[in-house]
Length: 317
Image (cartoon, rainbow, N blue to C red; front, side, top):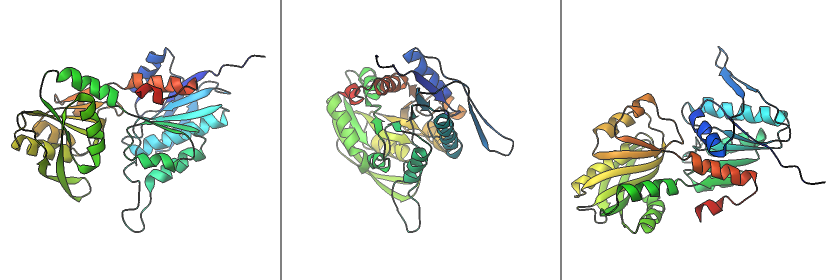
């Protein structure tokens, strides 16, 4: 008897249906049926509309705002699929919410990123696929395989085409992003600079000075996410004061909470380039400085590699 080929099914909640549909188009699949809605009291209701017994199931669900609603949708979908006898459940979480709460920064506080990992494993998730996770050590919070993808191929392609022939300097907006920025600078054969940042409290940052030469160059700020945009906008101000010709910003995850849109619109940033791991709110869609790149093909190829038991890392070699 020959081996029976596993059939692949892709489901999604309400977090980013457009991304899930793009992934399915890339893989020439139909998005599987599931009803995900709320009762009048706010409880989440999930019903899987297809047979998944023995199937290889992928649930595409970034845990972006509203974070708790989207996280609960993911948890309940995984539980429903496990009880429906899916062979393997892979949570495809392009943006992993709670990732910044990855350690104890004060007494008597939770490690929320770990708690989320425990919940996902408890309901039957057997593999996680995420992208540019904020802290690499979060992979160790899981006792199951975790594939952390990088949006670098998509971002690098856009930078190469947009700034061909121009004098470019890659800029890290803080010390924590130096490794990422150095890798980009090496691939582009460009210079590297760092913005020294002093943070007074959470979600508030003050840029102090620039380490490196940016005078007369096109400065490109790199970050894994843009939340309130305080860091990027402060960095853009000091880069212009330091003589940069123009300042552009690239980030994987467009969280864009609070005053972010207004800050970006009124900042020295020429534009902000993000990916579609998180769907843009209406305010961000109407901001002419914000450009969105798609990572659906990268996620789709990774899903195909996992399904066919091939190496995901081969996509980045």
